[in-house]
Length: 205
Image (cartoon, rainbow, N blue to C red; front, side):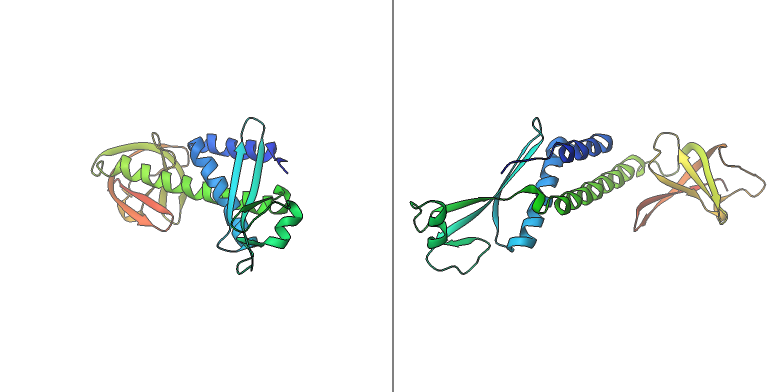
């Protein structure tokens, strides 16, 4: 059965467009999520054909199982006797296509795909930040004071709002006083790697 899943396809496509991922990458991530769900259900040796029609908003999933005399791996094999219930002409070595309804595990698969998309987006953002600022150490950057917390000034940079940039207490000029929303300029002193990605350390000292 080909299940109409236009809402699923359009929702993930929208997420992709806003995060600037390539459409082919979106489809690959969605297929990865579907395949991961199939592995949970049929085992690690499962073979499947996954077709996504963006225009129609449909997703077709077919598990492929080889016809054998004696089944050793139910996830990838089917007994000749069972296969002949589907078609009496089946022979050992043939491949049986078993169409799987999307509803059987679609929500889990889509969630897995979304997590992959979010992870890929974060990796891309981190790479762009490193590429943008690795050769700008020592240069003056401008932005806006986003907040002041525990003595550090959090800055939203004018030309790269996604980057995490801070002015630690020791890098501040303590004769100055800033408030949220103020325009601020500071020198990029170094780039620190954190579990969440690169952090730009700025200085006005």
